[in-house]
Image (cartoon, rainbow, N blue to C red; front, side, top):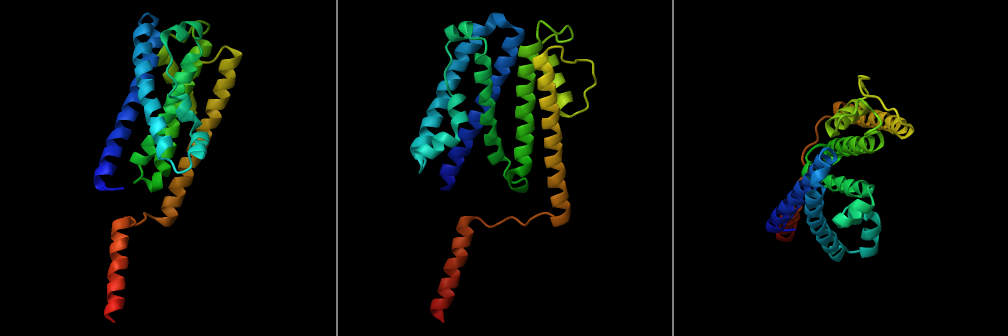
Length: 231
C-alpha cells in the first residue's frame, strides 16, 4: 500500500468511526427524546448506506470474498438501513442499530502502536460492552425501575457495573436486568484480567523495539544483494 493509499484509508476509517459514534449518540438521544425519532432514524438511514457501501467495497477488494462475508457478518448487520416505518413496527430495531458499535473495532488499527493493538483491542472492547450494556439496561428497565430516569443513568449503571465497583444506587429490578448485570460483571472481570495480563507481560518483557516497515526491509535486502554481487 502506497503512502497516498494509506492516507486515504486512514481518513476513510476516521469517517466511519465518526459516523458510528454519531449514530450511537443519536440513538441514546432518541431514548430520552422519542419525539425526534423520525429525524434521527432518517439520518441513521443515510449513515447505514455509507456503511453498506464500505462493506460492499471491502468484499470486492477481498481475496476470499465468501470467507470475508462470513467472518465480517457483523459489518453487514450494522449496515442494514432501517426506515422510520420499521422503527414504529419493531422497537427492537434499536438493538440492530447498536451493532454498529462493532465498527469501532477499526479503532484498533488506529491504536496499533500500543502493544500490537492488544491494549487498543481491550479498550475498544470495554467501550463497546459498556455502551451495549447501557442500551440493554435501558430497554429492559426503563419505565419499570424508579431509579432509572434516562440514558445517562443507564450509562452510569453500565460503567460502574463493568468496572465492578457498583455503588448500589441503581440496581436491576427485572429478571432480564439482573441477568444483564451478571453478564456485565463477568465481562468486567475478563477485561481487567486481560489488562493485568498485558501489564505483566510488559513488565517481564519490557517495551519492544519498533519493527522496520516493508520498504526498509526491502532496502536492506537490496543492499545485501549488491554487496554479494560485488564480491
